[in-house]
Structure formats: structure tokens, C-alpha cells
Image 1 (tube, rainbow, N blue to C red):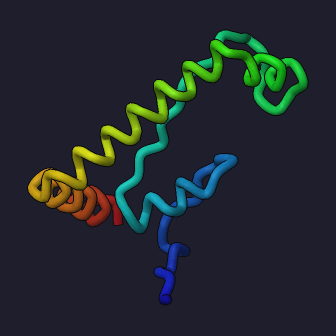
Image 2 (cartoon, rainbow, N blue to C red):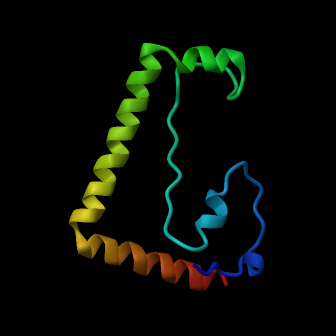
Length: 94
């Protein structure tokens, strides 16, 4: 497997590799909210994340992502348009 040279792209600050991946393939980075003001990676957030309400929210988000993936898989024209838009955007940013 060959990896593209990413040194020509600007470095963006983030706590995920998704930014780097998004230079190579189309990517979405969805998020969803839990019912808390607690900051991620804290004991308070961990407690809320294990609640039944958070489980329901997580399952709803997972279903939405699965249905989105299914739509792309089942519609070759949609996939083609996603790839074309990605390439056009990527080329315009170089």
C-alpha cells in the first residue's frame, strides 16, 4: 500500500486523524450531543455517557450513519457525485 505525501497540505490542529484522512478520501465527521455540560474525557462525562438516555442518542446517531452509508452503497450515481465533488474540492485547494 502506498500512502500519499501529505506534506503539501496545511497542518490543521485537531485531536483526530480525520483531518489527514480527509485529504485522501471523502470523509464526514459527525458528532452528536449527550445531555450534559461535562467536558469529554472527564469522570462526569463518563457517568453521563453510560446512561440509558445516552445509549438512545448513540443508537440514533449510529442508525443515521448506517442509513447514510446504505444510501451511498445503493446509489452508484450518488457515490460518483461524492467522488467528483471531493476531487474538485481537493484540486481547488492545492
